[in-house]
Image 1: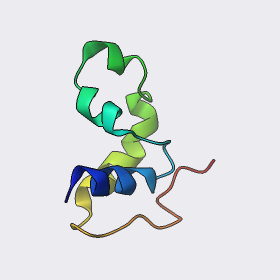
Image 2 (image 1 turned 90 degrees about the horizontal axis):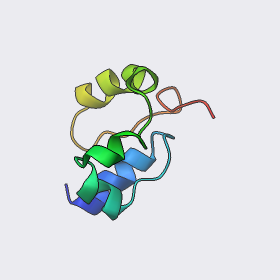
Image 3 (image 1 turned 180 degrees about the vertical axis):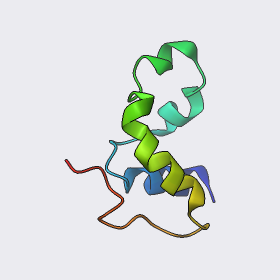
Length: 65
């Protein structure tokens, strides 16, 4: 997958938008303070990592905003 496709896929989860700059700078220490807390993300991370390439989240997978 291209980075643009990955960013689109991340956006489908309802966790907010992720820009190319966010992707490029995600490992920078100052970015950690701007990310969602791990306990908020935890329910989604298992589902994300278990998905096959090309699979998209369903309404049940998305953050309920």
